[in-house]
Length: 412
Length: 87
Image 1 (cartoon, each protein chain N blue to C red):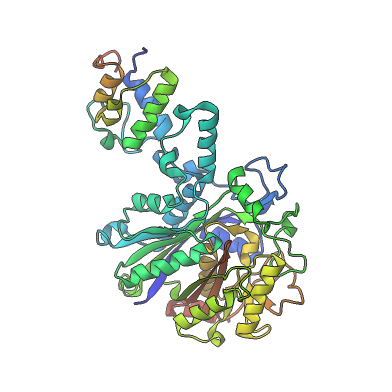
Image 2: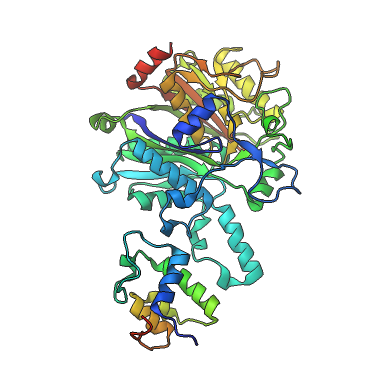
């Protein structure tokens, strides 16, 4: 049974809404900025992908405001956009015909920090009753489900920055088991002291003060990553139903795989290469059929080396165009769901967005990194890779549907 | 203790749990069940927390299980039915 994406909703630091995000991304316009959400002056890392222009009250009913963390508000915004984009009317589906599977890493940590501070400093009477669920990592799935009446199989995946891919992989399982629609993806954010400190503790964050030099995947001066907030929500749908209702189909989730790295002292190789191979096997294609790779792009030299080695092994040196548009948003806690959306938009328009502001990859990385300007290309199949802290590796193969042929031809 | 009236209760609910756009909270709502007003049990818990804090009172557990504003105000005001003036 084939699962296709029929709706995309985006909330990103460089664009609120899919069109704004895609325009900015093609233009190489990033959304990394000095942190303003809290006073970060005493922290070693002070740049983040903040979404600057999101007024929750303009997008959500007032009933939802007291009970939602910012990341849930952004998730509800993206979910509403995805469902509208799909032209889906959940009330017309069977009662249990639509589920929700999202990825999360932090949960509502900003909400949680505020309420815990109230508890410690003012006492239990000052803690919001909504703390009971607002900081829970599964809250986005729950709130999306309640708001849109999606009662089918639902859940949440927690695999750090690989999560968005795992959510789509799990959503596809539900489609195969007979649920016609699953709203999936991931929107998260942890731009508060409590969310910031544990990321700094990984040692993987950039300490550069200049937002234009802070997150440079595969560059010779790569020095860690920048966290961002936001993400993407997608509507995944059974292909037969999508065709029957005449929905526009962005592409098929053709292959999925996930592995966990071996223990650091095991002497065994990291799992990323194997993950990519497993996903291609799952899609039933060889590496020669991949037209573009959306790489994980950790911007940590050792991790970049592991990834470029894997890509060189799989595709040969400079064997396939590679891009890391998350360089413009920061790495999102919703786990690469935005990369999936971006890959589908690239397939639709026949344009590979650049890894802005990286000028060129370091010589040791023998990959064809797309930099500078978007590259026109006939795109049929994309491989999306992601890694999460703690050894998570995930890979997704996306294949354009025939609907996109017209724009592919135009792009040529 | 201070007597809580309906306008104060609706203000507290509105400020702490939002307001359903399709409901007129300024109308005669004393006997309308909370769910129909757009408030679930958590919204009531949230309101109870604020009332305890702002009015310096300890509320009976029955307040959380009140089904209408009239029942809620009666519990909060120690059994005294909301009078016409308080509405």
